[in-house]
Length: 275
Image (cartoon, rainbow, N blue to C red):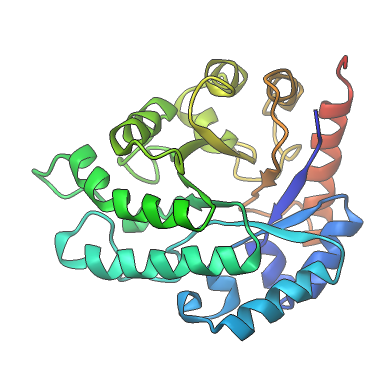
């Protein structure tokens, strides 16, 4: 299977504000792409002009890699909500703009985590609420040629969509192949371990559109004790060939060392497998 690694950029951006510098480091460490937090592009990234979007894309591709996706979609929009009826229309408008941004940047996938913007409304049916909210978002993503993933998160972050099965149920309710779910190894490792079994259950068998690799201690792969020697073989044997996003939330030393550790851990456990 093809090995493709992409780096989530929020920690990179904290040390290297320019996308070109982030891209240079990513390529040096063996990644083929960046997965971008829109907030790292400035306020109201959903309103960026087509000229600015083209310049950002050129900045990354000029370093020999590409933007593979967007994640933390609503982190820069504290007022947004996908569940509060009074704020849903404005939030949909933001997401439509971010889909257009992702398309302009040449991305393939969008990852919807953003726990603070998905707080359930008491008394409302969560699946009905999310189905109605995401159906037009999924349609817009489909028209842009993108996969839009709802990310199951741990119960310490949110009570809205914690398991892959819950994400898959929402996908089924929406019924659009552009709307999928995903596996984040840190969240899954906290909620429904072992992650390798979860991969065997869902990858290649269900609507899994993306993978995030991180430790349950919130660090990079290799920064803790999570069994990436089981997780990576399960992914490879399941036929995964799309980019895998490295998403640490805490550093192991500096940014370079954190992503170097991640890349080495993932590559080692991917390569040490029978073909």
